[in-house]
Length: 326
Image 1 (spheres, rainbow, N blue to C red):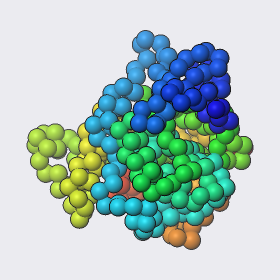
Image 2: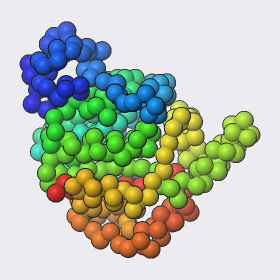
Image 3: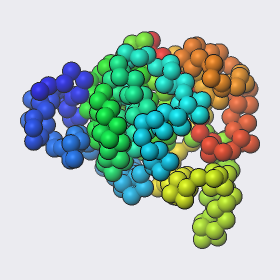
Image 4: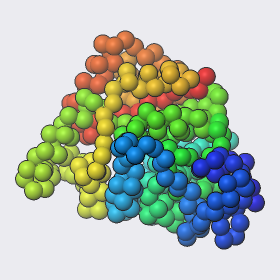
């Protein structure tokens, strides 16, 4: 069986999905399944002197899948939890019901499972951590979610044909790669003309308190964890641990400004649509239209938005930007 969406990560040719393996019809490479999941990870083929953290990051998330499903029992509780989070609610409500959606770096697949509960969508969840994908696929199977497929990938070598997806989501991923811009350029090719890309990154200014706490935790031998506002929340110990590890023990992260990402958009054929938090100071509410074009403001407004992240510290300086492919 061939797919009109998935392609060989090495040469972009068609793949034959057989019962016991996956074969490229051009370069004849055979890929395998593990627990029913296609293993389509292909290593970077960079020059020897180019710094590559891919294997280090994969090892980290194999040991620390994020986020976990501790407080989610089934599809009903996942949807109820998501409806309490405005951003997740807006994604689910406003992504086209008949759209093709790809989440790159989906982790344990909670967003994918949520979006695929709308049965007319076709959703793919892709990540480099097989353990994370197994958790997501276990939830998918237990809740009989049929229009979702998980696949192990390297985002620099994505096993998908170009311009296949109405929406590509990549939240909290690019800043854990060796080359975030190259990663963006790679996944941006997968977006249809007129489609949207959503990327979430750590902000250069909003991340300052996190960096300070990280230094304190290192100096005090991991004491004083209660300095982190999320650790003080009334959540399970497992959730606190996974949050702490992701925020403070990740082997690699970079930080980015709104202006930097605007340049990524412009240089790769995208137009700015939205930023969360909003550049013009509008609060995010259940009535917000996240795919409607907004004013990107001037340099001073954009700096002011980022400076506020320094004080609104709970998400660790994380922000989201949305653009449309033109």
